[in-house]
Length: 115
Length: 113
Image (cartoon, rainbow over all chains, first blue to last red):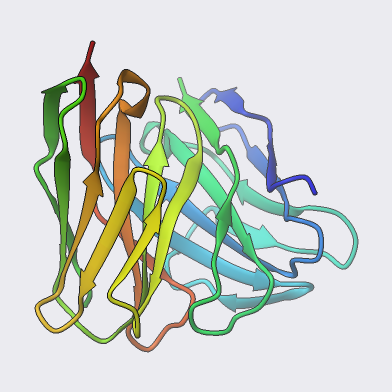
């Protein structure tokens, strides 16, 4: 059973370009979470999605960031018009359910560098 | 608002030593607590998950304890090895959300041969 997969693992974008980060959850998992790890900071929750639904996007910056989890295919975190402050590691996690205590399994992350 | 603090921020020990990493959280109403390992440039590996009703969990040389009332958890590593060198992260699931993990900044552990 493959784990959570993220691609690309490393992404370099120039200021003003768009970044698309992909996440395929573990088989059988329909709950996806995105976290961001800024340099010297802890991981911070960004968004929680189920298939075709955004459940909680309270951790997402108000502008330029969006996320989706379509019926078919991976979850996508999209950052428009990237700025240097977006440089970070973006981690995706998935779980089988939303029950309290349900374990989240993390992917290897995508390291975004904005030049 | 839940806050998680990990002490120390960095720790360097000789091989073979037993060691303790500390994690504290401000809101004791947690659902569970997880310890993760993060290697440089890599993802997170879950080490131990302790449900709120449990006091401790063990896996091999690792033992994690949880004292919910005092808002503390410890990760005990026995007979440390150079391969244990990594950043150890503590995260809690709490509050009105049963899915938002709140992470500490981690403890960077170096085990010297």
